[in-house]
Amino acid sequence: MNVPTSNMFGALLRYWRNARGLSQLDLAASAEVSARHLSFLETGRARPSREMVMQLSAALDVPMREQNALLRAAGFSDAFAEPGLGEALDPLLRKTVEHMLAKQEPYPLLVMNSHYDVVQMNHAALRLFGLALGDRAHALVQRPNVLRLAFDPEGLRPLIADWSACARHLLLRLQREVLQRPADTALKQLLSSLCSYDGVPADWRVPDLSEPSLATFNLHFQLGEQRYGFLTALTVFNAPQNITVEELRLESYFPLDDATDALCRMLAASG
Image 1 (tube, rainbow, N blue to C red):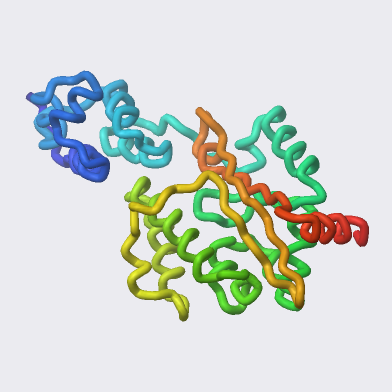
Image 2 (image 1 turned 135 degrees about the vertical axis):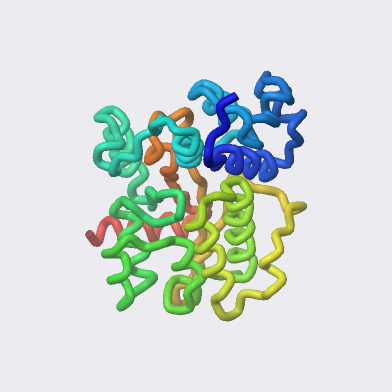
């Protein structure tokens, strides 16, 4: 039997199996391979075919970026491209995103990557966050990170009503994503940076997985004497063909009350 000099694939396979909480027998049954062959793959006594790498990745629900890493470790080329946003969106998909951005007006919509960096936003989002940030609105010119803006005392944090409950919810969402994507070091760094802000309790570092994972979230801003509220919802693309599209998130904001609706319409009318 041809034994590879490096068993990076076996180490990564074992890493993902443990991350998903599966025994070799569990994974073998799910991927429809023999437990003996799976053991040989993990120890380096056998080399996987490209098809086997993809089969095991599917059984482990490995994200596209990490599937590419598994393929490279096994000596194969990437299966999924990671083009820039302009190239990632085919004409129809690009038109769909642009349509969603426009139709969400006069309410905000953000397009973010998997690390919550804003890559695009509609005019309503620019107006709302520009109003909230005031002299600090220059941060929106760059690629702001919405979670850092929410946690930073120099960002949106002073304006978020019930900040403690909001921040705890956002942190728990991020912790769940880190558990789902254990190889994503940038996501771990983001989590660590959020926990390092003043006012973030140490016990928040331990995720309470008994808390429900909500499909939507209510966000309230205190602007002067008036409180405004939005229901926010995340949208992702199902079964994409490249990494960039898989990692896109669209966050839509919908007014919870007449005052918030009136604010959005007033901002739109004022330009």
